[in-house]
Amino acid sequence: MTAPTTDPADGSGTHRRELLPTATAADVRADLLTRIRARPARPLAALALIVAGVAGGLVIPRALGRVVDLVAEGGHTTSAVTAPVIIVAAACLVQAVFSGWGDALVARCGEEMLADIRESALGRALAVPLERLERSSMGDLVSRVSSDTALLAEAVRSLVPQLVGAVLEIGLTMVALLLLDWRFALAALLAVPLQVWAVRWLMRTSRPVRRAERIAQGELARTVLESVDGAHTVRAFRLVPGRLAAAAHSSRVTRDLALRSTRIGTRFFGRLNVAEWTGLSALLVVGYVLVRTGHVGIGTASAAALYFHRLFDPVNGLLSSFDEVQSAGAAATRVLGLAQLTEALTGEAGTTRTTGATVELRGVGHSYVSGHQVLHGADVRLAAGERVAVVGTTGAGKSTLARLAAGVHRPTEGRVLLGGVPLDAMSAPLLRRTVALVNQETHVFAGSLADDLRLARSDAGESELLAALETVDARDWAQALPQGLATRIGQGGLRLTPVQAQQLALARLVLADPPIAVLDEATAEAGSAGSRVLEAAAERALKGRTALVVAHRLTQAVRADRVLVLADGRIVEHGTHDELVAAGGGYAALWAAWSGARGQGAVPDPA
Image 1 (cartoon, rainbow, N blue to C red):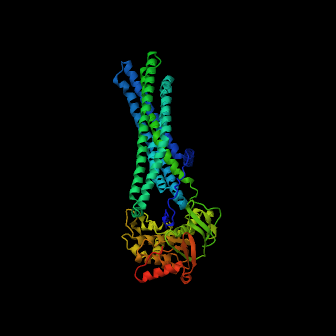
Image 2: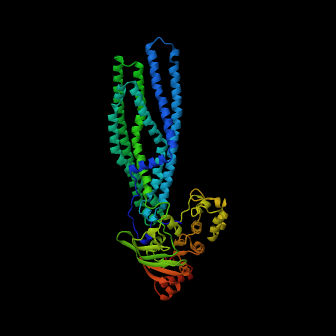
């Protein structure tokens, strides 16, 4: 059961694209703290292990300083340096074991949080009304749940452990310098103003570029996806050069922003090198003075120089990661922004419940673009269990009427009520339980046939799956597959025919078992023979349900309880098939043309 993302047949034209919500940095921080507080044991254990590893590493410069003192004093045998060397070896082992263990725990905590974020973001995207998603760029959504989450995953695996370790190592190393002599720490701090200047420059310069780069990547993804999804239309209307030009333009924009980010990073590292040179020069001068005046030994001065040298990697890693942090931060705001979509994944809208299986459209009008009305003043009521067919020429507004009845769109005028409840008062879960839309653009998900069917009802047993397939006359071919219901279909698996794919969608309708069903030309993708098979399958799938059927063939209208005829976005005729034929209006002419062509062996498409 799928819904289309565009409606060119109804004259909607190009929709105004709205970017999906983006969270603020404060939202990201609040979300992170909430997740840490929810499960604090593992983060605290990781912090303790990293502290132990850094502390072990700080022993190394002091032990090497002792070796320098022993050599400078002279008169000692080689055995005198045995103890400091053993200490160095033990400290290296402690640092490696505890730091590695701590980094692994940090990464694991991050992966768990990321999994929760990814599932929440996808759940929100699936729960939000399709109308809201259709107003946005599909590339924007795809880039958030793919490239943005991939960027966050990479940050979790490498960046977060690096940052945590760097912060702890810098802090504890400065404490060690203070313990040696406060003047060493003061000399080392001379590098800080230059580092702060470099970071402020990077943040000011890189942040807008990184944000623009993420948006440009989403636009590029949108352009490619729309071109691929609409390949037939693009070729039919000879739009290939224009689409290629649009993709080339998006690629150039993305490339130029990436190169600009690289240039910014190169200049930033140059500024960090200046800061390192300044700090190390100051510390060597201070060490020289303190040794000459007898305030410290040469071993202590050597240890101070080694401590400062140890700061090069964590400081540079920390400061240079600001560029990656900004990229990850931009990705986090986009992924967590999906949580701001207005429809909740769970819960109901108050205590609202449907009271039946009726469908009512009261004075309904709709426009996709302001000033361009595609449906005008539609008044329709479907009684429980009634089947109504909708016919009309291309662009008459049939698909728009179907989407409004299915709750995919909210009308810009009038009201739609399902089971006596207005759409605006229905939560997303209640809407999904009440009505289902099946159209001609059926998607076959990658996985087993059973998994694809269980998308409609996750707890369905094998017997129930087979019964649903039997209802739509698909059981025989399904059981004839190499592994039966366990056969992998979709991308990377068995390719289903258009008829089989549509039968699969109708079987999902049977499993979901909503009281109301909307079929929007659900047999249009099959040939004449396939259409007859699907019409029979749809007939059985709709049994006992209130149904609105956008008819691809007039045989569907003949079997309906009533027929609505649309023209230019208005209902111009309504009644039973026999009544409309007897009235001699537009439907009668359409029926006469269809019946005559059918007698000659050619059946035209009434839509």
